[in-house]
Length: 251
Image (tube, rainbow, N blue to C red; front, side, top):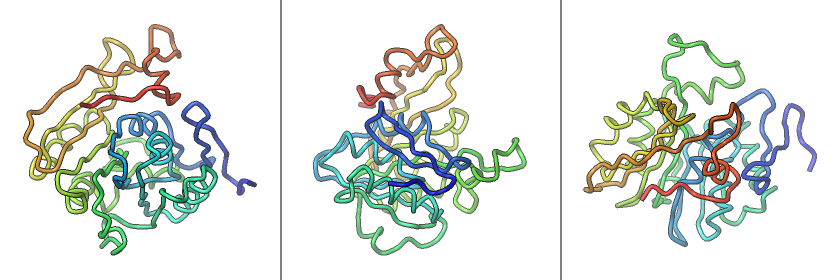
């Protein structure tokens, strides 16, 4: 398969998943692998990803859960085109699909009819373009939430998800108050997994999962430490997760 201009072919999850990505646009990184590693589902269950981009998270998850089906939604037609190519390249067409959709607009009937057991996402991280130094123009759609802020993503998930379904997301640690406030009305049984760069440092990310109408008390898990005492090396746990040899247990 020949790559289009401006697109690179990469291998992620220890080489187990091939991924075409825009050379100068949003590129899947650590967050995508971590999110995929914490998803769990029973055989035959359906999962939807909001803002799937080129498909990194759902393809990594599909690789590990071969008896589940996945649908990705994204507002960007170019990202959807890349995701379609990646689905085909990884031979997952029979149970992985992607749809162009805007979460700020009415969703297609084909999506409303799915009633997934789980929805997951790695949302745009910055809501206020005036509060920070912007990324490159090619990446802004993936980093700025525009007309669909985090609360809307969570409330849309609540409307789509099956009874007792699960929502899972990864976000900046400082977004945790907004996440909790948005979950409160519909979701419960919340579990939080902090992700720290190194032992003793503040968490930069949080992985949060919650169940629709869940009633269990909130649980704060021990953090995942990404790097050891060296400048670049991952901890053995993080390395195993990034290579697809281990999962993140949120139970």
